[in-house]
Length: 360
Image (tube, rainbow, N blue to C red; front, top):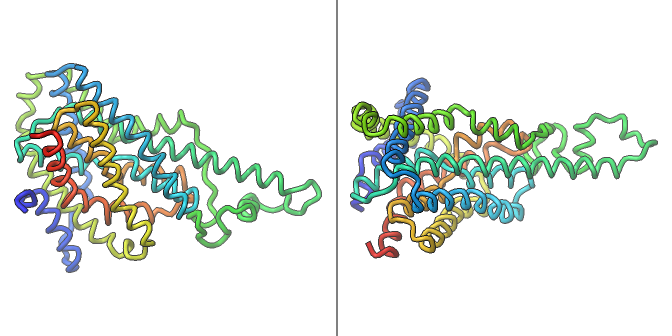
């Protein structure tokens, strides 16, 4: 219970409560955007300062390598499971959401570790950055493969004399098992075929995305400036950080409450995945971190990252890259179920488990 008495977590609970009782409390959009920018910039600086102090040691390399491995394995396993209950496009979108990471969950976890006096590597911010893109790339590749299969099916089904040759591509796609014209099918968006995007384009979009660029850029600046930069930026990236996080989690609590009605409409199987999937991903991270003897704080953060789900970066890309998928599906699950689960229960739980297993 004591672990929940952290101001950041309590402000999140306050936001959820305010949303549930339909209070007029709200955070202006410009303020929300500013808080996001601040947190990413401060987090990047902290990671850069830590890397400047530690260098790229074998311990750092093993933590970062494990992060990349999890970023590939989690979405692939998630897709294989979700494909049993969802269409291909929706399964790819949800798998990408749960294979990517939540920066706010990660930041909250770092603050929790500090409150518990558990050391962790600031370079784990780099692990978070590395884990954001692989799931998106894999989802787009899966979507491209599905569209190619649909195209082949259409070409095999249509003969030169067939009147289908004169039908629009959208109608032909529906006849081959794609989204039905004029209504949302199991595939997601009504009558809206998606673009065929190259991996190169997705990589470019991922690494030049504003949030990713700011995080990595701030990390480089922290590495270059080192101890002098850390002392100069302490009032900004240190003293203000906790208060800014509390404000942002208050806003996230309000957003979570707004998404709860959509959560109640989801299939029980998907709700089970939104709860059990992150716990399974965290367990996988725990086992791998134990095998590689990753330090205690880093192991907790790897569990948090593996268990988190993206509700900002992935939806922004997937809505464009996989328009056949239903956005209300992956956004409501990640923000309405998994995010509060990790904030209120997951972070303290993962910390206690690692401390028991590591004997700390």
